[in-house]
Length: 156
Image (cartoon, rainbow, N blue to C red; front, side, top):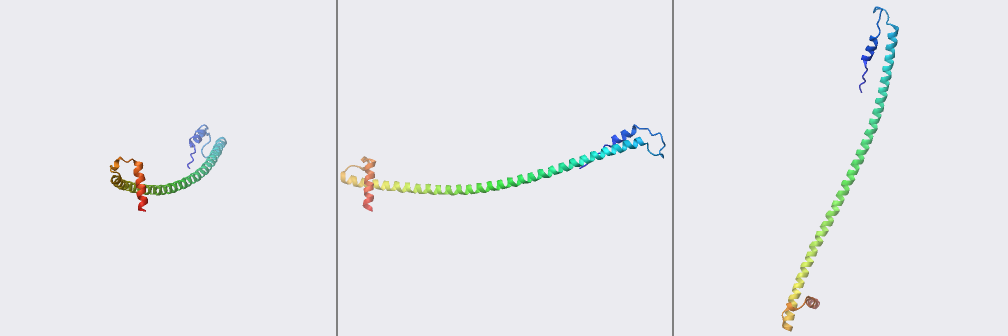
């Protein structure tokens, strides 16, 4: 910290006094008193400035400590959030994988069910056409399903 002392004020005060004694004689007592008073005032100002600087430094240290605490808390929160996001992303990926597998399995079941249904209809149409003499597409869906169920039971 730089402390500026206003010497211009000191010089200005000294100009008001005319010294009538030659330079080899002692300085006039009034000038000495004024200079002593000015020096005392300057010393008080310097002391106040040092005290203010010490308070400022203490505040800076407190603010720095608070900033470091906040940075650490922010880093902890960021780490925790990153960890939580990573965990949730892993869980989401696992759920999506299970969903995709379930959809694939479901598609397989639907395909197998369609094939079985079509095969049952085909078998039923052969049975119905041969025994009753009219084409299978005149039979309603419930009848076809009942016939398909009967065929499945016979095959087991």
